[in-house]
Image 1 (cartoon, rainbow, N blue to C red):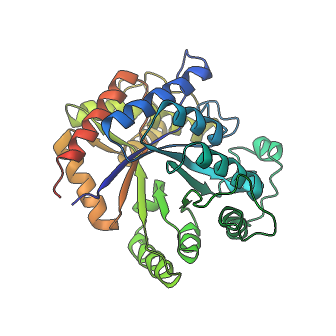
Image 2: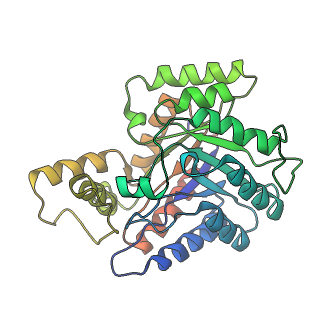
Length: 324
């Protein structure tokens, strides 16, 4: 049985032939549509100096989305703590919560910049202080730090940990919800790691909460949905080859590819859930049976915006028909 909550993560993917600003407008429009479709939350991401992604400042984009919506939860998936002082992050999200009470989430991660020059521009030291930074951030939000983050809140926004590497253990020890995505979902040890997370969270006096995030594309057939997955897969394959993550292009399986490119595209498509409603429902049921997750955060993107809107609509409709 699939979990109760369905949410979206939008990374403000740029598209060939469009200015970056258009990608941000698409994100806001998609959030408005997600609220209409009944999604639980809508998150945005943080990437710096990446040609294919327009959003480098989640708090600014969250504010724009919250101002255009009225009910859906909005937040970050996530703010990368190595790039920021914890006090500044606390102040930004406390302000968002004060302006849009009861609607703001703060997801945090530990990823560094995409390339060496970007990491240097961010003044990254490469030191892993994520657990310490997370604890400091929490202290500002809950009012236990030596200084008080303003505006002061009676109920700070909830924190989520993007669980890569040691993130599951860190999230469990902190008693926080975790978000899983990428290759970790295919890890043979995932079940054991989730058991460990849940045990740590309960030991910390918290209720475990697991969100799984992956691309989900719904179309008339498996073949049609695969075509929608190929542009993102092509961008991932290009990034592996060139070190630069490009804007989305209108790519399909008919484009000539080298054997290595074909392998990378097929591998990336294979990590998505795609197909008609029955195929997608079955794949998601299998995923949630394996992980026991509480929520799906669909991180889908494709070049064709009309097809993306249709896929979002079909996924939402599928969700409302799931077994209770």
